[in-house]
Amino acid sequence: MPKPMKYRDVARALKKQGCTSRPGKGDHEVWTCPCDQKHRAVVTKPGEISPGVIGDAIKKMACLPKGWLQ
Image 1: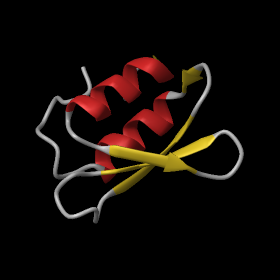
Image 2: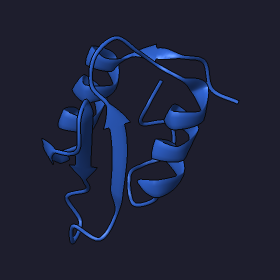
Image 3: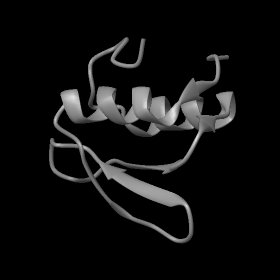
Image 4: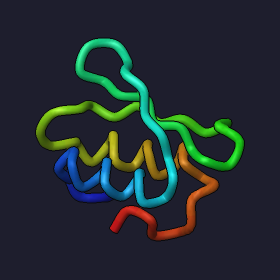
């Protein structure tokens, strides 16, 4: 299981891979992959992100290279 991470570190890693974001409901943000915008992950915006959400984002962004979120 991954460790909790700060939102800014996750956002920086997603942007580095070419992902784009759009607002979701409340404090959520929807990130879309650059391949064909088929893969989407929802991340909570402020503060620290739980290990479960980090693991879910890694699974959902299957098109990104292994180890993109280190």
